[in-house]
Length: 150
Image (cartoon, rainbow, N blue to C red; front, side, top):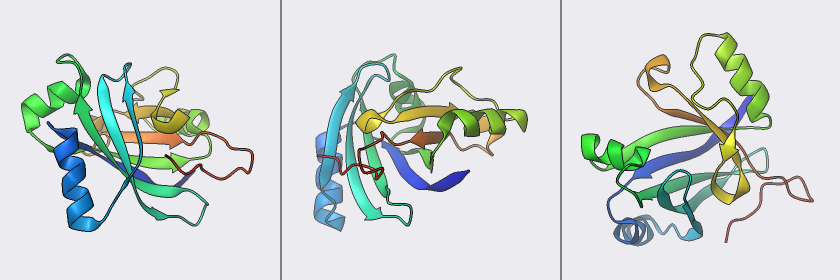
C-alpha cells in the first residue's frame, strides 16, 4: 500500500527566509518550486534523500498566496510548523478507497494535482489521530523512477 514517507509539509510565513534556514542549517537545496493556485500556496521542495523504491523523501515548504487558502487559515490558527505528513503510494486512487473503507474520511472525491505533477489526496486529521495525512502518487516518468525536481 504505502511505500515511503514522501514528504513533510511545513507551513511558513516567509518562504524565502525558511528556504534559507534549511539551506544554511542543514545544507538542503531547493530542487523544485512552484505556485499551486488551486491550493493557494507558493512552495519549495527540498530533497532529503533517496528511497528504496526509487523515489525520494522531501521537505515541502508552503507559503500561502491567498488569505483564504487552507495553509493561510492553518497558519493563522497554529503559526509556523509541521502542517502535514505525506505517504508515497503507487496507487493514490486505490489506497484512498481502501482507507475510506476502513472509516477514514478522504477529503477529495478525486485526487488532485500536487507538486511536480503528482496526484494527491488528503485524509481527515480527526480520523488520523490529529495528523493531516496526504497520499501521493508521483508523476510517472519514462524510466518509471520518480523524477528529480529542478
